Amino acid sequence: MLWLVLLIRSLGLTCRWFKYRRILQLVNRIKCDIKAYPLLGHAYLFIGGGDSHMLTCKRLGQEAIKNGGLTNLWLGDNYFTVVGDPVDFELILRSSLEKDDIMRFARNLIGNGTIFAPVSIWRPRRKVLAPTFSPKNLNSFVRIFSQQSTVLAEQLQKEAGRGPFSLWKYLTSYTMDSVCETALGVDVNAQKTEDEPFLKAFEKCSILIAERMVQPWIYADAVYKLLPYHEAFEKSKSVICNFIDKIIKSKRTAIKENKDNTNKKSDDTKTFLELLIEGSGGERGYSDLELQEETLVLAVAGTDTSAVGASFTVSMLARYPAVQEKVYKELLEVFGDSERPVTAEDLPQLKYLDAVVRETLRLYPPVPVVVGKIEKDLELPSGITLVPGCGVLVHIWGTQRNPRYWGDDAEQFRPERFLEAPLQHPAAFMAFSHGPRNCLGYQYAMMSMKTALATLIRNYRVSIPDATKNGSRTELKPIRITFDVMMKDADRFTVQLESRRKKDGKFR
Image (tube, rainbow, N blue to C red):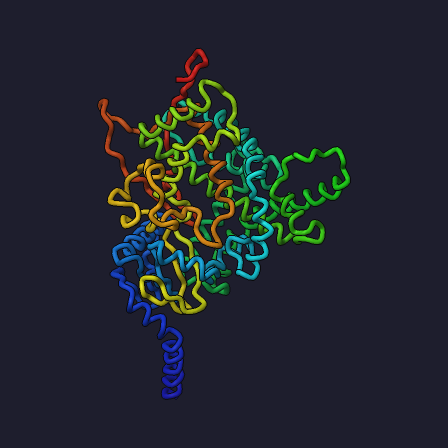
C-alpha cells in the first residue's frame, strides 16, 4: 500500500514539475532577493491589511528597479513577473491583452465590465464605449462638474478655520455626485448625505477583494464561501448592484416613453448610460446585465479613481505652499476676482494645475499595479522570454519613480518636470495604464479633478496640521499609504483649510 501512495505522490510531483519547468527556468533568470517560502511564496509579506499591502508593493517595485526592471513574485503557486521598466511593459501591454486569472475576484463584483473582461468581450464593448468619451460629450459634462464642485466648496465651509479634518469624504461624495449625474442621469445628493450606502458598500468590497487576492489559501470558492468574508462581500455587492439596476430600468422606461418626444432639444446633454443604450442598438442592444456591468465600471472607477487623484493632489498642495500659490496665481490670471463657475474653455488654460495633477499621479497613482497574463512566448527587449502560464505584474508605482526615466530627483515632487520636456518614454507615465487596454475615461477623470481643484483652491488655502512650529516649517513626514484595490492615504487625507475670502467678500 505504501508503494502505491509513493507512486501517486511521485507522479503528482512529476506532473507539477513538467507544468512549471519553463516558469522555473524563467524564475532562475530573473533576480529577486526577497525570500519566498514553499506553499506561501511571497504571500506572507501581505499579511496585515492595506498598509502591509502597500509596503510590499513598494518593496517589489524597488526590487525590480534594482535588478534592471524585472523581479519575481509568488502568491502560493501562482507566479508573476514584476515589471518596472516601460520599454518591457509597453511590449507586454500591447501583445498580451488578457487579464490574469487572479482578477476573477474583481469580476465577482464588476462581472465582465471592460476593465477586467476577457478579450473576446472587451474588444467589441470597447468599440461601443469609445465614442461616448468624445470631446463634445466630455466638454458638456464640465457644467455638471462645475455645479457639483460649487456644492463641494459650500460643504467645506463648515471645516474652514476649524483645524484638521478628513478631506476624503468630501471629495469622494463630489465624484459620486458627478459620476451619477453624468453617467446615470440621477442626482443622488451624496455631498449632503451622511454615510452614503453605495460608497460604504464599494469601500467594503474593495477591501475584501484585495484581501482575497493576496491570500492564496482562500482562493478556492468552496473555502471562501465558508468564511464570513463571503457573506459580507455579497451583502455589499447587493447594495451596489441593486442601486445600478434600478437606474437602468428607470432609464430604459424613460427612453421608451420619450423616443417620439419632439420637444427634446438636440443639444441636450446625454448621459453615458443613454449613449451606451443607443450605441449598442437600443432595445436590441445590450441586456440589462451588460449595461449593469459597464455602468458599474463607470460608477466605481469614476468615483474612486478621481477622488483618490484629487485627494492626493490637495495633500501635495498642502505640503508645498509655494506650489499652491503658483496654482492660485494661475487661477487669478484665468478667473480674476470673479466667482464665475469653471467652464470647459477654462481647463486647457490651467497648464500649471495640469502639471501638478500629473506630478501627483506620477508619485501616487491611484492604481499602483495592473496584472496581465502571458498566453504565448514573448521575448522582451531586455532579452528575457516570458512563457505561457506566468502572470505579469506591471508596476506603475515603481516605473513612475524609476530614476532611469525621471532622473535623480524621481522621488521629489516637482510639477515643472511636466512643463520642461517631453517624457523620456511614452509609457514612463501611465497613471491611467497604457496600450490598447488603457483607461478610456482618463480625460473625464482629469477634467473632473481639475474642475474640483480649481474651485477648491480659488476658495481656500489648504495646509497640513502642525506644518509650522515656533514660526518655522517642520520636517514633512512621508504620507502613510494603504493599498486595497485603490491606493489611499491611511490617514484619510487629513488637511486644514483657511478661507481666502475676506470679510468684505473679496479674495486674498
